[in-house]
Length: 154
Image (cartoon, rainbow, N blue to C red; front, side, top):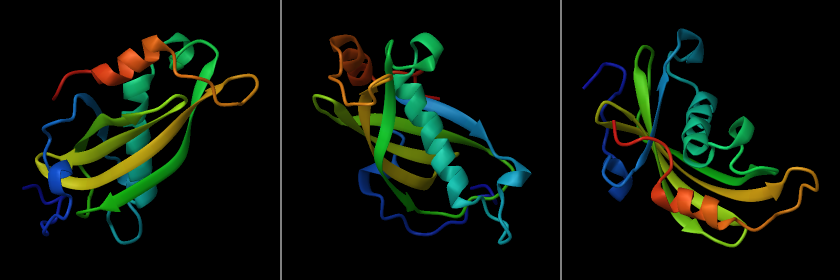
């Protein structure tokens, strides 16, 4: 295990494994990501989770999930399992948990090597770009989400 991830028992259950995540994104740790305690700040981990979500649903014009629509995060629950320190590269796994008429929920995990750093659950709503009102998820986006979006496992 890298010096960047300090070992402690994980309470993440099934999320502790890379298996089951079909959409993968990657991000490089920067020295500026660290706080005065010397570990990567929790706000940076929220940004890594955002990178993973975008990898799942983006792909259309200007990175939008589909023309004329945006995705808003209405709930984000993060759990921290291990400290993370500079330097390194993290892998962000994202998978679909639930899909509704206008919203979907994803589960995510950040790994440094095989070490589980943090997990998250985010509920997202598809919104009309002009009216800013929820709109139904199209069959095309529904299929892309269900297929796992993004790239194959690292």
